[in-house]
Length: 87
Image 1 (cartoon, rainbow, N blue to C red):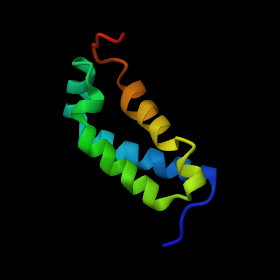
Image 2: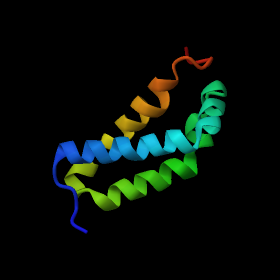
Image 3: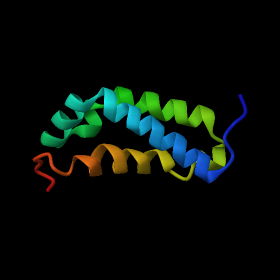
C-alpha cells in the first residue's frame, strides 16, 4: 500500500483513527478526563493509533502532528461537557 502524501488525506486518516478511538473507548475517555489522566488511561490505544498513522503516511507528514491534533479535537474537545479538574 502506498504511503499517504497529501496533508488533507493525512488529516482525514488521523481524524478517522481518533474517531474510532472515541467510539470504542467512551468509558475510558470519560474516566481519563474526570481523573485528569486521559493520556495514561488510553496510553496503549493512543500508541496503537499512532503506530497505524505513522505506518500509513509519508515521514514529512507524520512530523506535522496531525495525529496529536486529531486526538485533542476529537477525544478532548468533544468531551467538554464532562466534569474535569481541567475546566
